[in-house]
Image (cartoon, rainbow, N blue to C red):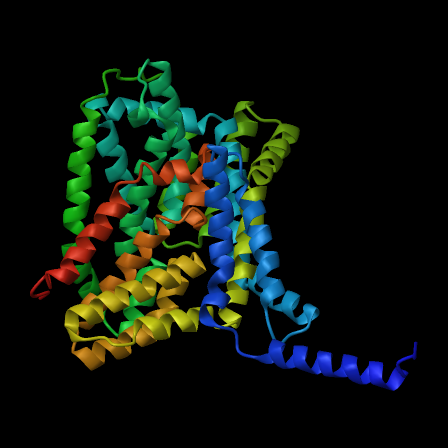
Length: 458
């Protein structure tokens, strides 16, 4: 048997390598670029359903598998370059800023609990809110605070620990069922937090929506409130009806006003417009001062409480970084552009144009898990559609903001739901199953497009 000369073997491998590099350099198809997101959803949802337990499948594990898959299918780059793209997304300044907020929020919530701030706030809420108006009161409180501070995450940080405490009081008082569970009470707060995120003058989503469409915040608010205001009224009435079934009014214990100071201060500073990281840092310092002065904390126990709070956010931090990296790879491969081109093709009429804008920002938010980034990503295209079809830019800004908040409230890997789940110690899926306001808000926004309402804004 003859021996194949080395030069032929080298030529053979050279040809194979050339073909592979040619294949690897081809532009990635749109659906293939988006496939890491589908891989994540399939792994997490299908595995959880198969296990009949959404607690059984860590969301971080699903994101890890999807992230590795995203790096593997990335074309035209070496492994080092692919990892660099992923790392750029994971270490994006917006992602890191959110992580610092998670760290501070965990420390604040843990130290506040340690000094008795949560118990004091719960007891005050139980004294002010009768049992039958408890649910509606919590929802309106979340709406007011989020409207004041302009951030859903800040509202969740302040009120979810209180909601968890109220759920415990309801259980201790003998109230059972789905409408008194920690997930249901937490969902009330999460729903209300999106009201202000959508409407507040200092919300980053409002700023992004108005700037991309060149409209004033006041004009956008007037248009937006006519769309989502009725939704808030409907949900409030629904909570009043559900609250009528609360047969047990939890007994409010004694509370010390000084222990309410951390939450009052955090809300007041946030309303003043102070940076949320600075607000939480001051809140931690106030917790330490109260605890050390009253004896509920020692220096050692304070540090332990801070460490415990940060550790409790560990999974959330990992998920945030993995999601940021994976979504950056999707963007690099053209997944976002693919969605944009597909939705803006074949638009006919104003109704179709508005529906396309709604679908555009919704899908962008689904892929980015950040409503502000979704608005910024699609804002220019939405403005072009608005000019081309003669839409009212005030309504376009409202559509961008409303539908991005709607989707943000429904994705289990969104910052708001992850934060709420982490603070309450429950699954994001259980919160989504009890959310009312985002669904109703989305329904009213969709009707406003289909029925071409409101007719006039001024």
